[in-house]
Length: 618
Image 1 (cartoon, rainbow, N blue to C red):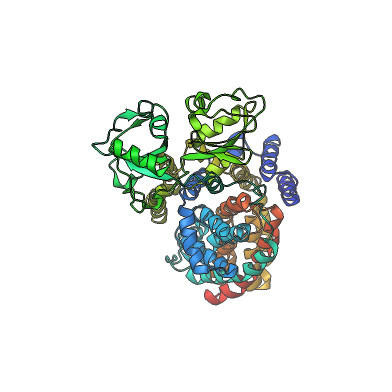
Image 2: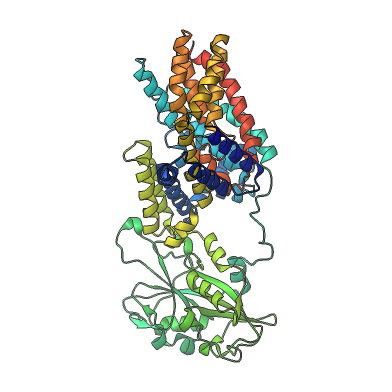
């Protein structure tokens, strides 16, 4: 028991110092428990197979898809409309919305759902996301206090009452307590978060001077002389490839991309596919060609091939928001600077092999402050030329492998992440709603609902690639929780938790019910900082029940003290999964939780000790 407590104490010290990564501290603590034979290998690794950890991984993927499809931005813009430019109103709205969802969905699920929305909201309002994320995590726990199913400790005390022969608790028995928690939380966190969570989160670091995709498009005037042609049943372009049509040579016109309706007839999955144009690209009936050139040349191309031009105000049937505009969700653009020793120097664009080898098109050349946008095919490349290339993001990324030949300006892969897949937003919304319903009504286990939602997000294209799904997972948070979960097992196995709780409560029984209630509350609150809230509630519920019966008072306020104290733990990032989920996104250090969470935890405890006997009399 002594060794376990020493390991726990050392872990807390290193967590607070912040000099070593939190996941590494947690792993070292786990290894020490193994080395001293306190836990078996199976027990030590049980955290990595825990359903909470698996669910967190799935929720990261779901949250990433919500962000990537632009759904987070759409929802956050609505909240932004309600909140206006007032950071206080936005803060209160975020907390209230989160608390409401948390009343019916697990706090982990609530935070994963709200995290991308709140980040998008903060960036849109030009505010630091760190100001909102920690309070949002706390609000999810507060909201869980409003209903019986809101948080596991609520069910623990409900079962403890039933087992002891008392009347159980109804679905909304917790509502008064939950409303008090939310009120106290909002009033306390408003000044605390404003004072302690106001630092810059580094969102704009390194971006100064970097051209955005919109900047590039404007610089090379890509939207100028951009036209759309529809391939009809009578079009001469139908079932021919670009090579045999020789559009550049005949019409001095460049086909930039093709947009095509997918073969799927499912209206729920209806979208528009983007295709990069290469020499062997086959043009099909119904295709929309995005072509660039002088109006006279494009008009002649349209008439001679019997492919009508689309009016600028006419939609493409499925995506009216993209009327005649360049779109960068699948196909992107980037600048490439030729090196002095490049093999392409003095070669013409048509002989450069860009299209054949890398599947990218050269759209323009910047040479000595001059932009060459027409007649590119026969232009000879020169040292220092800046080429504007277009292709699928994966192919643009491959250009970085030829650094002896050229340098890709900026970070195309980072730019790709900023482009939302807006056409997939309805699909992401549908998956998210189904997941929330399944979790709220316990139709299937929560972890199953989350994993199904995560897989569906990938299969339906709400994330560009499977690799992107893995990149959305915050491995530091997962390892932190997985490595710390066995600590609760070690405390129980060695008898440390039982000894601490019994000693704490045993010495207060003679001082009256209010003092005993305070002892149970703050004993539970202290223990929850080191072991899971559910495990703490299971440990303290029988102690609270027997303590109340021993001094001849009602057990209800004592058991409510246990569930509130177990759920309202804010002073540690690993006390609850929501606290860990926002740690990386908010760029918080361990001490941030101490500065903001500890005062809130103490204030909440004092108010609850005073009000619980009024709500549920002794």
